[in-house]
Each structure stands twice: as C-alpha cells, then as structure tokens.
Image (tube, rainbow, N blue to C red; front, side):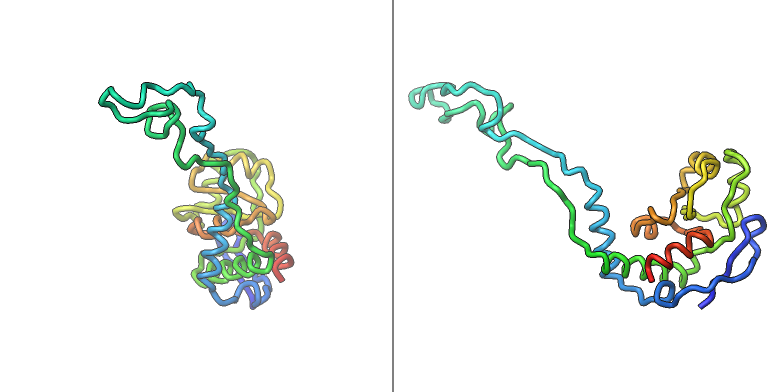
Length: 206
C-alpha cells in the first residue's frame, strides 16, 4: 500500500511512499496493546519503596510497664506497629514491577498501533523535519498546519536545532525512531513521522 508524504513547508502532498501491509494495515488487537502498554509503564516504576518492620526500628527492648495491676492494656515492646514510631505491620520492600513481554508480542503491538493510527488519520508522513535554527517561534510556525492537542515528531536522527526549538512547547515531543514506544503512540493525538524514520521502523518490524 502507499501512504501520502506531505511537505512540511506548506502541508501539501509531496508524493507517496510504499509501505508493507503487514506493518501499516494490521488488525487492531486491543487486548495485546493494553498488555504491552501496561507492561511498558510498569517497567518504568522505580520500585524503591521500603519500610521497617518492628524488628528493624530503633526502640528499647524493655517492657514499657508491668503486665498487671495498672489497669492499662498489655504492652511488650515500643516497636509495636500500633505505637507511634513503631514498625510497619506489612513493611514494603524494594521490588521490580517488570512484566515479561516477548519480542514478538511487542512488535505485533507496535504494528497494531501504527495501523490503527493510519486508519484514524493520526499518522502523518512528512518529507523532512529540519529546522534552520533553535528558534521556537519558527518551529511553531512550521508545524502549525499539522497542529493538534498533542504532537509527537519521530525522526531518524534528532538534530540539535530541532530539539532546542521544540523543548519549550509542552504539547510537542521529539524522539528518534529507535526510541519510539507504545505509550507515546497511545498518548499523543497526532504522530508526525519523517520518511526516513518510517523506512527504518518498517525494516525493524517487517
């Protein structure tokens, strides 16, 4: 199948590019996409939360008061979880939230997302994405015809001028094709992809 390639200068069609149906016309698998997105986000969690049990807190080992005769509840340790400053009953431990997703599942989910974005006309292929200088105003005017509530620009190699010009726009993100992830494809309203990045992604997913 063929996809239209647009010119960044005037947002007019500037030709077509041939792409594989297996990558950009795949069936949308919502369950698989959900699983891969959840696994990707879980892998980004730090998992560093830690608490102390009653055996680990610093407290006196002496019995606070005698067992009987005072009319008070029995107490054997100041490290008890029901006391202020005591240990946690079920103390949290550092852990990994990583979920196993094999390579075939991940690539299938990416193909499914790219195909659905194409069908929804949220994937736009452009001929080039070069910026003369690191000027946000010039960059904003350049992408105004493709403006959306949020925009992800995917390049084969992110140039320094492009990065500097786009970083002041909170609704725009720039990445190279190797860093493309399923969460970004789901999150952004529109994906602006250069022709070189499209070719590289297709080679990786075919």
